[in-house]
Image 1 (cartoon, rainbow over the protein chains, first blue to last red):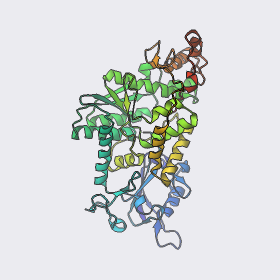
Image 2 (tube, rainbow over the protein chains, first blue to last red):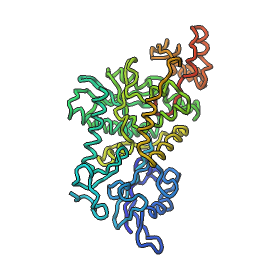
Image 3 (cartoon, rainbow over the protein chains, first blue to last red):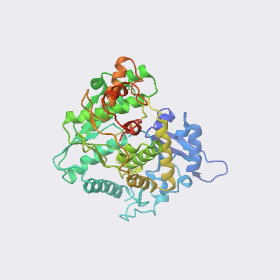
Image 4 (tube, chains in turn brown, green):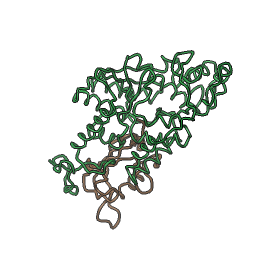
Length: 99
Length: 355
């Protein structure tokens, strides 16, 4: 599945300072849909190069990291259970860096 | 209405204010689901209400916005200049930045502030540690290492902002401290037993007895909304952690606040409320405010903290003024009348957030 992932607010530093990643993510074996839960574990394995604890806590993002799917707060679409579709844009922004 | 992105699975969820457009975020304060346009409106309007209810500004005043190039001060500069126009506040707004002299951090963020100067049409003044004190943070760290460097930086920044404000001849400094910052500081001050700061840190305006008061128009504004606002409006801000500041202690408080927010977003406002409700008993001795004999800055001691630290640096004794004040002030204090209890309430510095 083709997705565009964007990292901001300092999170880009965890993936070699690249903000926008066009990626191809395979569905987990036997699954029919790709959820944000799947995507996060994929991101952690494939994109995050350092300090993963700055990005994730447990199976979700670290509190203080905002997530938007197609410019919509993921708190409106079910957070980890949000299902993703072809060409979706997922944005991660840290609020934890200095103001 | 739903032209920009795919409506699909989020289609039915409409903004609970206008009931027309697709909701774009959930407000932490109210849990309402609202669209971008209504969000801009309520976000700006709430800040306007806070400004009016607390009489933060008077017509004709000159106001400096403490600008770091980060998200909070960038959004503050944008929103204040917008509200100033819209509601005819009659304010002269300025951007005021402090250049600590940290290569790879502040030099980059100052570039952001310089762009903001052009984007918002606000005159910018930069004051540097090098000019004010003769030392950059890079030089200080080279001399003292990575221990206590945040003490130097915090003490120097506070004064630098005041000195910059005096140069700009402003009546007040507005800072971008948000609700999350303040809740975090309430917790920290309780944990440290810092009574003097606990009673001050929730005030929306501080230093009214001093030369230049400071105010926090974002006192009730959630960090999430500030970041969402900056993101949706595509505001240009800088986000890199200071290279010298691990700041672990504040980090723990910060993480705890964010954990609480996830469970119950109101917790942030509740902690601010609790902080406000602390009553400091009148028998608690608070430090008496005087002026520094050396530079004239406000100080509860003979010399202000910045002068003590600077003396240490210049004499090659950088430990002077760190921790319990053994060095200079305690020597001179014996000469002057007993400070009586001021020591124990003396505030400790922490990173870039001073209240």
